[in-house]
Image (tube, rainbow, N blue to C red; front, side, top):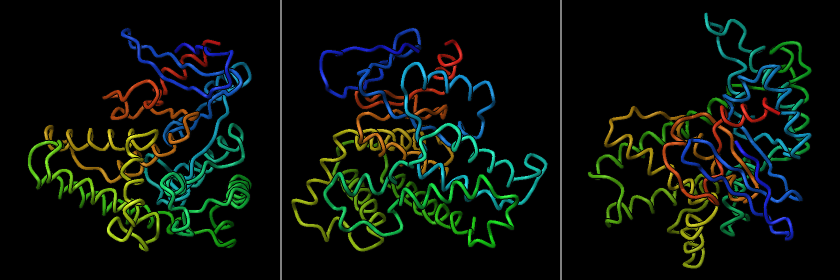
Length: 312
């Protein structure tokens, strides 16, 4: 991975990720505006001492700012109450360890939720459901309590419920799987036909319905509001989400890929790329099986990012 710094005579925030023919990548950014980097939850869980040291060197030398997403927070919190098994004899310690890595590595401020980003970008923030509003100080305080707790019982006494977070994820997962089933019933692959256009309209509507906590759908928005929603999927964050979703559908329909409810949460992270100075790091293969262009596809494989950091 090459960290290329160009356009240094301007104050434009330009962050691009260019794929090279040899499989490497170039990250191009203005040195005055180093990118905010957020990680897939599995990357956070897998960080070891060597990786942590390397990332801290990268932060020190390149100015990268590490952030954690609300998806990181929800995923980790939802598993803290898992039942022990042979692979994870102490789930609480495993996921608490991930929170400790976040607290050590990342800016204490969480990134806004994907729902906040979406509704603000389309001018519907006033309809945003309260549960999607990420209170920075509250989340930072909860993160601190997770790190300092001796066990799960201590957190439960303070009102924490991992089941609450798990339920949120399961409800969204059920919707996503149902939506994929309906897509398969259309026949063929995603294209510009009326049937697929209508299907995409339902997808947009669900994102509005979900983010507004059931108060709004596309049909209850004004014409101008509807146009803003559709337009969003042509720009940063939105284009990546739509491109990724279509890629998943092609894999599911053509290649008979098994539907996975986690795919919905994984792709929601792409909405955070609406801020053109954010970079997403993940080794999940679906994110690297297509390319949406240097300005949109600000997604870097963890193995390449890590290798570059360790080599410093």
